[in-house]
Length: 99
Image (cartoon, rainbow, N blue to C red):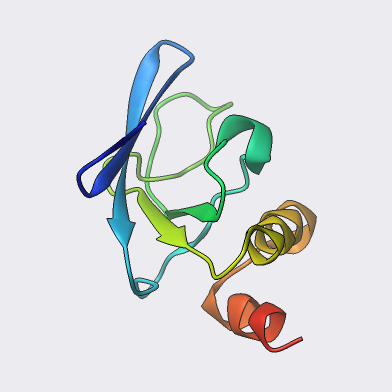
């Protein structure tokens, strides 16, 4: 649920807190978790690299997650799809919105 300038997502025995941002932060990329795990239309989850102690976990900094609002759900879905294929960073986002 969106609360002020955050989206709090409660799944898998933990709460992920995504700060809603208006600009793409430097060093961030789309977190490849898919729309089914981030069910917030128009928004895409952004992350930066970090360290997680479990070998099966992605090395994502769970304490600095961001949510970026796209101009349309179509753009958001394209970014999520690109993230699942081979990653989606700010340059990829710019290409997607210029198509």
